[in-house]
Length: 234
Image (cartoon, rainbow, N blue to C red; front, side):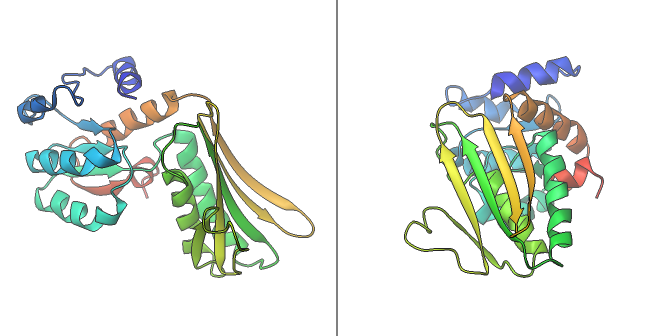
């Protein structure tokens, strides 16, 4: 992902001054407001928390594309605000996916009026993807639960192996196979018809471009944001 982000940044007229991975972590100590405008963090759930604790005190604006730290969201938000810096995060930085996030929220509010429709979320990814459901699928599910009164919780296919979902549960199904980049789908189905929102990533470039746009938007800004808040000026 780092190479794709670097290419996207250069294509948009930016300079990449540091390239840090597990082999040169000591270079994190060299980062400062004098040599860096924004840091983009795309690593691994096991590494992200340690990276954030080292980077946030430097008061450098951050773009966080890694998932898996959501349970510590409030602690990270407080640390970000206490240091007077900016942080933007997302489960998915694809511009197309963020359009779908916005549509998903609005559709949930509309479908709250029509209880004859059940709803479910699907995600498909390559066989090597470790998390299931994906962070993006969980974001879609949470948006639906927030907007649809009849769904108060969500469950994944692992939990539903031996039972059917309860009426108040939103089911999430996941497929891990081949080299699928990423497909996410939300479907509302009734006896009469089905309404579907679908996003399919063709390659990883969309995530990289979105991350660079997020960096442009968080530069010089203070606060703790989701990408969609900056992207749509909400």
